[in-house]
Image 1 (tube, rainbow, N blue to C red):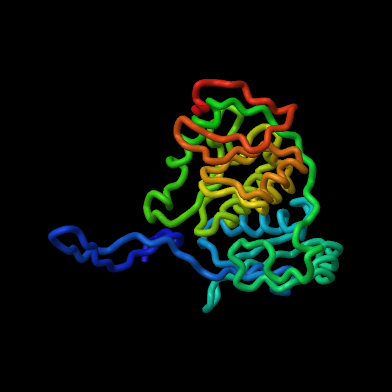
Image 2: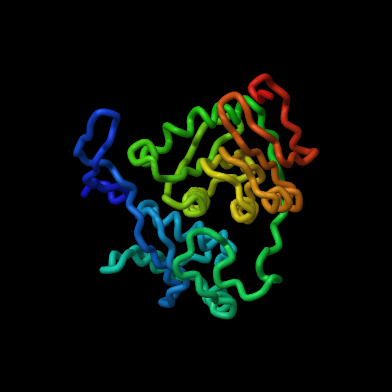
Length: 274
């Protein structure tokens, strides 16, 4: 087992034309993580066991369990036989509200609807945001920098990344996880713990942009989401409702703007491609 709890080694048989090689490979660790609020388990997520304090706070904020980081009074990560339990002590009012709308999320991998009881509950109202003006060159620079902030992905090839970038495209903070939603929750939790100003930058994710990724960003006051892969139709609709700048298929030399609020018109540059 590696000293890093995020990865381990496993024996593999590498097959190539004309031969085979028995060796070992670096594997991303995936483990059950239970989120326990005031002594009651609310959700069990499959996640990478790193930055779990950030993950627990980010999940609590993006799921609407907490309205502000100050409502989290205490947090403890405990290793147990079957996985990891993160115990959170939250404000009494928030805990009472949680009990009223408590739903089973066991085994959830980021679909966002597990345990929802009706169509009316499927899509939550989305918070309005202020979209920043992000230059094409800044997007391209952030893309170039992202890989250097994904050490676990470089080691294992099995994780997603979520990065907080300033308006010049510098990656200021990044988090990784086997789940793309988990990576974003970790980033949002890390931003909240550091009291970053959400309007002064944008989020770059190494995955597609689902509606829930847009929801999570808007709930954190983040006005721009840039994804390496495509958005879904509902993600675009949610971005329009929130006033969020949504960019997808962000690749070297090219990216696609799916929603651009009038107040966030991007300066056109050659980096945007065709």
